[in-house]
Image (cartoon, rainbow, N blue to C red; front, top):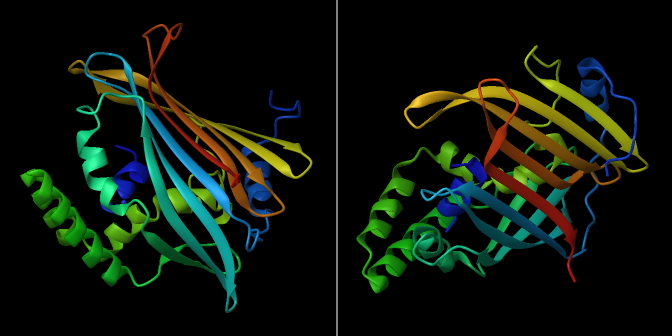
Length: 267
C-alpha cells in the first residue's frame, strides 16, 4: 500500500519537446526550484489510487482535500481539510478505507513548512492522534466493526515519527523541495531520468526497474514516475506513478497500480 494512502488511513491518515539532460544536470535543475506557495488562495488537491483487485479489475478511490497556505513567522502554515472520498468500486471493496476515513472528513489539520520548503511538520500531533484514535474507535463501535478498534490500537502503538511520516506523505509529495522521490542526485544505472522545461512548468520523468512477487514467483516490475512542478511556487501540480508487470521478453506490460496527485485552484 502506498505511504500516502496508508497515511490517509492513519489520519482518520503532450509533454513539450525538449532535450533530455543527464542525471547530474537533473540534480542541479531540481535544486533550483524556489518555494513560494500562493498565500490565501483556496486550492483543491486530489489523490487518486487505482490498483488491481483480486478479480483482476482495477479498483479506484480518491481523497479530495481543500488546502490553503498562510504566512507564519519565517515560514508557512498549510491548512488542509479532507473534503470527501470518491470511489468507483463497490462499497464492500472499500469498506475498510471508508470506515476509517469517514470520521476525518471535515477535520481541520494544519502543517508547518519552513521558508525553503525542506520539510513539513504536523501542528500539535499528540492531540491529533488522540482525536484520531478516539474517532476511529467510536465509528467502529457504532458500526459494529471490531477491526476499527484494532486499527486504532495499531495507530497508537506506532512510533510517533513513523505516524507523522505517514500522515504527511500526501502533503509532503505536494512540496517539491520536500519530495525526496523527485531526483536530487545522480541516478543509479537502472534508473532513467529526463527533464523538460516549458516556461514556469518543469516536467521530470524517472523510470525505475524492480521486481515484485506475483502468483508465487518474482516478476519484473517497471515503475514510471512523472512530476510537473510549478517553478514559481515550488509546488508539484501533478504527479503520476505507474507500476507495470513486464513479461520475460519485455514486449508486454500490465498495469498493477497507478497513483495520480493533482493540484488546482478551488472552483
